[in-house]
Every structure is written in C-alpha cells, then in structure tokens.
Image 1: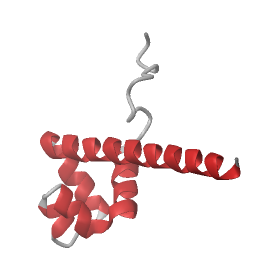
Image 2: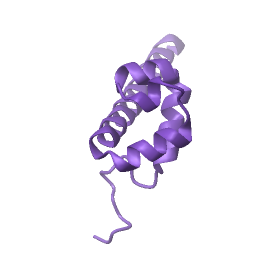
Image 3: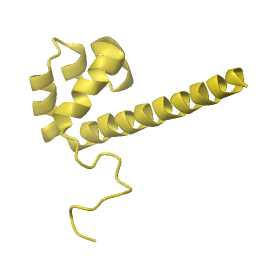
Image 4: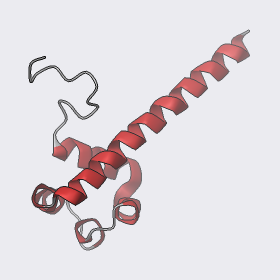
Length: 91
C-alpha cells in the first residue's frame, strides 16, 4: 500500500484547519472548549491560535481529531436513521 492509500483512516486528506473549522461550525467555541478543555478554545479563541497550539501539542491535537471522527460517525448514523424512517413512512 502506498502512502496515498489509507482507506481506513477517516482523517486522510483533511487538514487540521478543516477539522477545527468544521468542529467550530458544528459545536461553536464554547462547546468545543468544554469538550476539549484547552485555553485556545476558551480564551479569545481563533482558528489561527488554535492551529498554532494544536500543531505544537500532540495530545490536544489527538483529542480534537478523535472528537472530529466521533462527530462524523454520529452524523452518519443519524443520517442513516433518518433515511430508514423516511423509507418506512413512504411504505
């Protein structure tokens, strides 16, 4: 397998900036700071300050990446539930 192929890596092809931006859009800074309690999310938060901190702090970056994957999986499950419900209601 080449370095380009990572079928089981849900973060493959995503930048840290995209991950943080998506999480902020989904949760907002306050909730993101509650879920991952780091100062860059709670005290005068910005994307750029968060990226600087997360690039230097592997444990915090790992928590953010895990939250992103969990959020994506939860959204996928919810979409599947809605699709099943709409199929049932059409019958």
